[in-house]
Image (tube, rainbow, N blue to C red):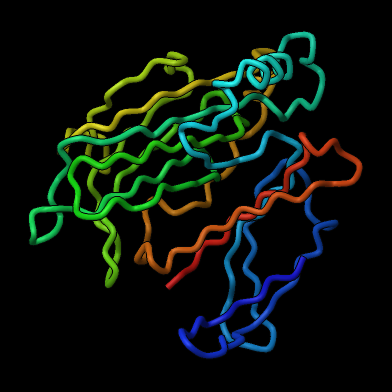
Length: 269
């Protein structure tokens, strides 16, 4: 796979900044690799996370379009993680769907008494985020996030930030939810807490979460070492220059529904 980096220029031709290549055949499957790739024909290094997996795709969709609300899709997923398939693809433990509905009563981070909030959802080395709702302390996102579950003892983290075009995003609050504590299909208001989760900040966030997993695979997975988390705890740069890409590439020897190549690209200062 080849990745190119460009400087976007409004009104004129974009400037080429470099390229790098990855030989996917050299990477082990079902494991997240952190790669520091020097840019050829340019300067700098591209830091990326690459995972080759046959698990369910990591994705974002609107609230009106999500797999678990479709009876046929839900039945297929329940069958996928049923006990009679316990010995099929042992690393595919389960799937979690997170509906990020809205937040209320957020902290005002701007001098105007408003905030520009967006929400980041993280599970192990997967990280997705919503759009920004500008000048609003009660934002509605109505987004659905889908993640693979590799370890049922993982903790889902949902963090709200205030976008700032000129500097790092401001922290507004977060919640951390162990997957084993989730009540499927329950829409719940979670009080936003500090970075250390030691006390409340201001505001609540409304989430609805479903976790479907195979208990046998989950039990066997606990015998393997926990995967190192590479993703930084919070954005180090403005959301305007934070870049995260997800690529889905079907492998010819795997059914298209099962095949996934996920690449997270995160810019650095």
